[in-house]
Amino acid sequence: MKRIHIVSIILSMMLLGGCSSTKYQIDINELPGKWYVHTIQMVPVQNFIDTVEDSPYLIIGADNTLAYYAGCNQMGGAWKYEKGLFSVHKMYSTRMFCHNAIIENKMTEILSQTMYLKLNKNELILYDKNKHELMRLGTK
Image 1 (tube, one colour):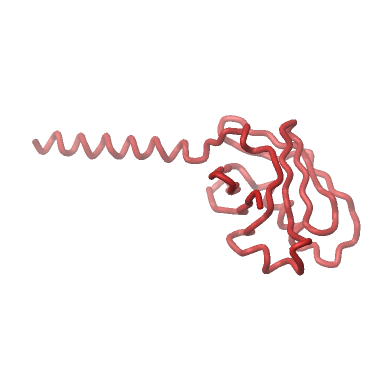
Image 2 (tube, one colour; image 1 turned 30 degrees about the vertical axis):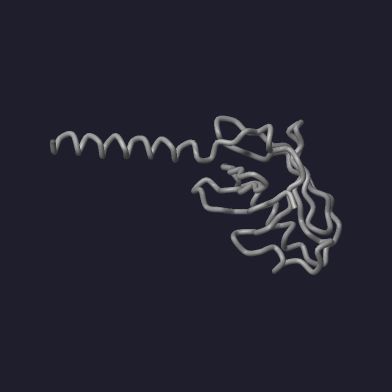
């Protein structure tokens, strides 16, 4: 009886471990659209911006293009999602002088570090290689 109990525990652990490996799998058909930044490294974006009109956003195109805006420069690149891993490459930016480029710089840094995505209804969460939350975005 003790042996059956141990086997059940081991099987349960294996099943739960298997679930965690698919935690970051997404349906890329739900990814394209305009996503508004809600938090940057778990800090509300309102702490960084002056007005709602300055709200930073990310546009993910179905054609694997990416554009983002944080109040001054136009920035973008290309994205790829393969085998559960997300990456941004071929990044570009206009080079206007900006009064406050903190969010622009942070968004560029975050997008270059993002490896995992999680998509819950109207929320997109970006994670780094260690699965630390980098940015949380929403459709509104």
